[in-house]
Length: 78
Image (cartoon, rainbow, N blue to C red; front, side, top):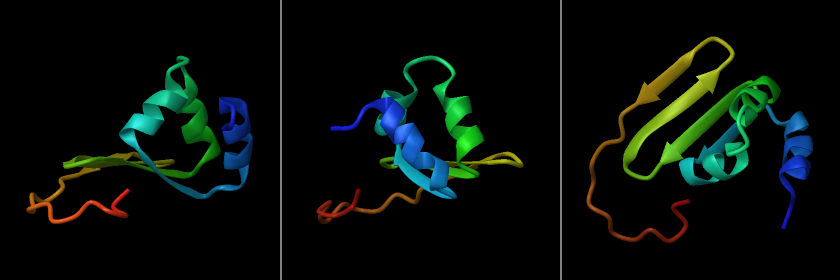
């Protein structure tokens, strides 16, 4: 497993990051980590299961609804 510091070092070369809400909480539970993440990665896309998708960019924060569909198989969905 990687430390939070190692993960943030790796993100220095990332332009777009798609991350789950749960993992984002793990990475940012130390206060201002979300702002550090947003400063390092130009576009951060946060998914949260069947809830809205939030896109953080250098310009603004956008929220997109997720359509309700019947779950058939979640294999490979994450």
